[in-house]
Each structure stands twice: as structure tokens, then as C-alpha cells.
Image (tube, rainbow, N blue to C red; front, side):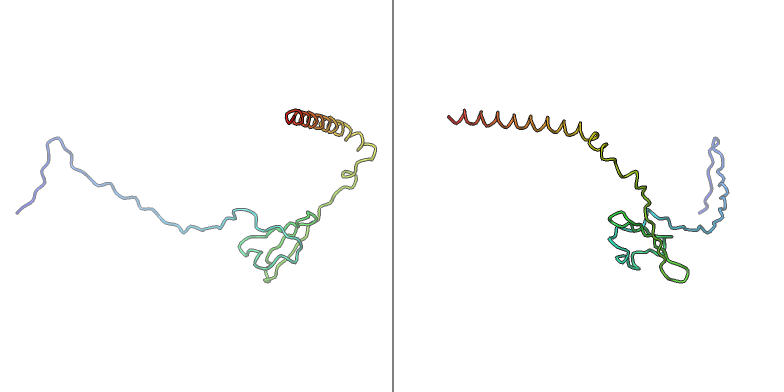
Length: 135
């Protein structure tokens, strides 16, 4: 049998839209580091080659006591390079003159004495109530 298209007098013939050709360019995938690599150590000897990632520029290993920070990275010749950073503290900033310490701590010590007196008084009151209730 023959097939034919029926057109309604109010309908329009449908045309297909030409498809747009998209050029596909190769995308470069750049690995991104989620955070800093490294961990706390007690000494530089604790760091092994497995702790230094090859896909990161460096790893940070702060010493637990805060005295040094080790930065380790792989060099071009396949060896691990270590850079050590030591904090520089100004000795004058950390020391308080002896006469100033007494002045600084005087209000704190006074407040502690007041708290101690209140606790002692509360304990005496509680003991007296217990003794009177037991009689």
C-alpha cells in the first residue's frame, strides 16, 4: 500500500534544525592538592620517603615541640631535599620583669582568695546542716 502524509490545512511542515558541530579540544587535567601534605613529627628521622608525595611540590613536617619545621620535597635527581626552619624569638618579648609579674598577678590572686573563702564558708555551712540533721 501507499503511504502518504496528511497535512492539516492549519499545520506547517516541520523542518529539522541543523545540528551545530562542536569541536572537541583535549582538556588538560591538572591535579589539585586538597590541603597541605605532612604530619607532626618528633624528629626529622621519623620522616620516611613514603611520607613525601611525588605529586605535590613539598610536604611540611612541624616538630611536635614547635622548635623546628621541616619542608621536604623530591629533587630532579630523585633525592629528597630537606629545608629546616627555626622560629626566631625575641628574648625580650617573652620575659617579664620580676616587679611587673607581682603587679600583674595581684588581682588574680585576690580573686582566688575570695573564691577560696566562699568555698570554705559553704563547706562549713554544709557540715553544720548535716550534723544538725543527723541529731
